[in-house]
Length: 336
Image (cartoon, rainbow, N blue to C red; front, side, top):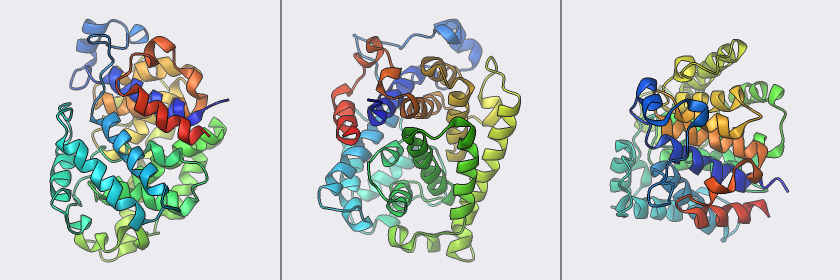
């Protein structure tokens, strides 16, 4: 069996752990410390490959979604309380010490006070902290398209309410879904572009409520279109980069450093598509990058794992992952 959910979750954590010590370093510094990128090891400390908030929040989202799904079909009303609780639990945890993003910290502090979640949402932030954790929504089986898209945007909006954060989260989850289902790589970018155009002016009121009114767009359709337009622009950059790929160059030069949502999506996907038949090399290439290396590599690992399945990753890597048992439990539940 392919076990795409297990493969994606393990790949995300592997990429995250590999990119953890390389974030904030340039390529010269990374190479001096870890050697050539094709030979980068999975870093261990006391026998464990430690991850960052990227994996921690992926688990928070996944476990919150699993709880919500126990009550029946996923809705905003069933999803928001357990996911909020998991996010706040992460915010309060002593293990939340891996240089988390300020948007997540501010929003989770507000969520901890109760009340309408929209008051906590940071509508000016399109940092990558929302789409680096959204992979579970591409992996849950039998989730209909509207629920998947609405839930992907809602989980973003709990912290990152900028329309590009919403759209990039939706697009990232959809990419994971397509890869898990076996979409051919030559068709992938066309499918993503068509999805962005199809959803460009669809504001998911049932999931977002009046979030758009907290920004300064003329109407709700214009609000969400602003986010999809930035995703379409980065797809243009990704397509141009793949027309003349350079596997030895810093991937951030092609599609951005990944600190913002659409660039994290594009650069993570670029690293996977540069090396589609070699998932280990894809996460190494992503981790050896000058930008937000852990998030870029986490997304590259999620894409590669969804495409190849659980056997993509060597046991010497998966056996040492922090939170391994929780990752495997979610993967097993969604792999059926």
